[in-house]
Length: 343
Image 1 (cartoon, rainbow, N blue to C red):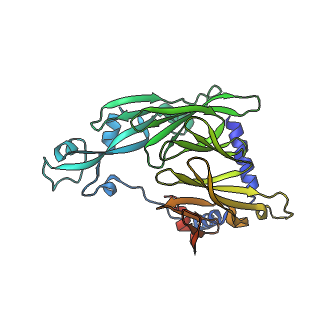
Image 2: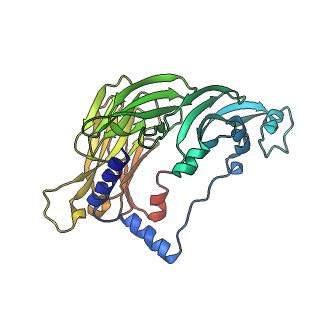
Image 3: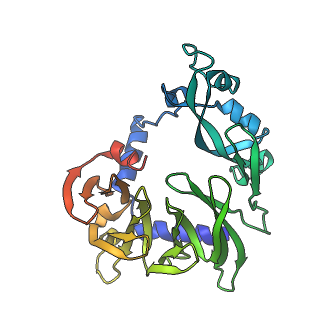
């Protein structure tokens, strides 16, 4: 499976032909010693008068010493005294019996330290679900990597962190295409639905009702409902990026295309990117063909914010569309905004 993934990636790099402007700018910055990196957010940055967070040290304790790969926080209320006992800081000016809102580790994904040392990668081996008092409610094992025997499962979390999917490779057919089993859970650990498919990667809707993914070797972009029914297929395309609306009622996807009929010495001239907006039932709401071409089509990203669909191209041009597809404005951006666009 890994050899095939590597081949797919190599082909993808070959098809791109040359780097995006964003990549060129990053290389230039590194050469000039001016590359900037985003600082990590510490716990004090997350604290406010109404929103405190249980310390990472306490998370490690409830996770029983495992290496933590990812954490989904839930919201609860407790007294300042209780919060202090759980390692919450910044409460010096508050009385012990005052009640405050606190974020607690609701879902904790953990990895085996030995596997991290062996494979140099944090592969999730189990997902633990906790209540707001730190009591373990449920633990779900996740298929691990065993070289030559089995591939590791992938974990996908919805945009609003209310749902997560475990995507497990189960068998390989005669063409080398893997069948996967996806099971979706809510953040309480309840199993909601699941079925088998042959998608490479999946993206889970914020309402937990459907998922989107792409088939092997530039296969179709497919929309499945929770019963495993295919709602829509976008054939023979390159899946570049996706973003869901906050309620999951629709999503926007960037589809990269290559026109082999164009005669050119520069491969990048064959590239273009389409923006397609689809609802939760698989109906196409509207689309914009060739929203970017050539250089601009490389590394196109999309996000939905307050029902505005925003697209940034590899040349840092930014398009704003209304929910119904009306072009609101076009702006020129820069590398910094491009890097933080999805953040």
